Amino acid sequence: MALPFFYLNQLDEKKITMDEDTSKHMIHVLRMQKGEFVLLTDGKGKKATAVIVDDNRKKAVVEILEITTEDAMLPKVAIAISLTKNSSRFEWFLEKATEIGINEIIPLVCERTAKDKVRLDRMRQILISAMLQSQQCWLPVLHEPAKFEKVLEFSFDQKLIAHCEDGEKRQLHDVVKKDESKLILIGPEGDFTPTEIENAIRNHFLPVALGRTRLRTETAGMYAAVGLR
Image (cartoon, rainbow, N blue to C red; front, top):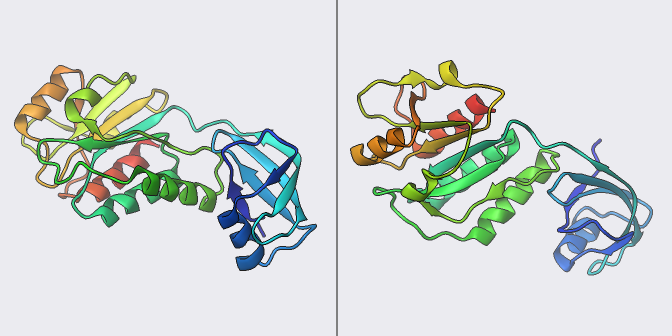
């Protein structure tokens, strides 16, 4: 059975006092006691094996026994995906993309995006929970919401835009170069505007199709995550 897994910003001390929420979950919810072992990660590749030395419900203390470092999933994969009107749909995508191992997530604001305000703190907590649930040590980089034009300036080996307009497109699985870093743009409900698509192509984004059916934004993001990773 896998050891319980917890997140900490830093793993640079031998003994660490856990915050109140983590202590409560560890000691009260999981009913862990002094002498039991846990795993810790800083979300930057470090994984520590630790033992509980004080099982206080509000200020549990663990002692690190060993730290290892895991490599990030490469090549780097980033998904710039339009925010959705229904926040729960976007949060579902965040969770699943993290489990799959996407390196960067960019909330995208397009002409047809229904909203542009988000709670980044809530989004980050969803990413942390998904990272721990999937037993990973790398937390995806979560960007602040970015305008479409700004994301066109990002630098990646392979840049793709998935859209539903007529025109020359290739299926995603036919163009992916597994050994290169990749960025894909996923549009809002109603798709990118023709002008946005033209601007992306002008900035060396390759138009792609995601299968043969019309997908919701979060489903398209999930399709892309699997196809690129």
